[in-house]
Amino acid sequence: MARLRERLTREAPGAPAFLHAVPAGDLEPVLTGTVIIAGVGGEKILEILRRLHERRRLQARRLVLSPHKDEEFLAESLACDFASQWRLSPPRHVHEGPRVRPVWVAEAL
Ligand SMILES: C[S@@+](CC[C@H](N)C(=O)[O-])C[C@H]1O[C@@H](n2cnc3c(N)ncnc32)[C@H](O)[C@@H]1O
Image (cartoon, rainbow, N blue to C red; front, side, top):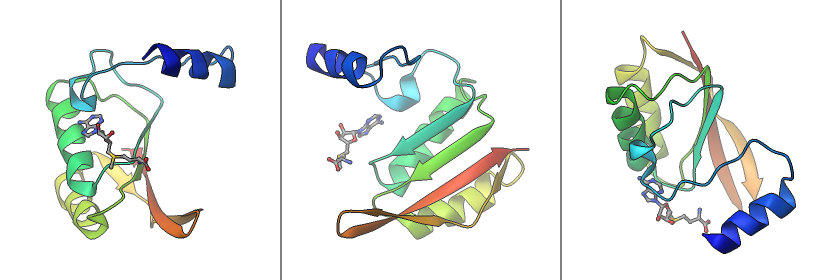
């Protein structure tokens, strides 16, 4: 954590960034603005979103979601379970080395 904090300070000086070493669904602050969830699978992203939502911590205007697996599951579940809360755009594709990652942007309704 100390090394991460030091790197964050060095690479993003002055940025309003904070480190929280907890499962994302258990974050204490209310999340506003743009929330990015990446680097985990689609099922985990849904689990995090559901937990934040049930704990009333998710008050973001926009979500940026990039699963590293279970992409279809995530897209279908978002379209079903969150249709009344989020407007989902078609996925964009971002190159990360040899991989192509899908990125969904959802705007709060
Ligand atoms: C597959 S690894 C990510 C690998 C990384 N994207 C990379 O390319 O090196 C998944 C990471 O998500 C973290 N993780 C799993 N569940 C999480 C949760 N609920 N909240 C936050 N992080 C979580 C794990 O600790 C692990 O570091």
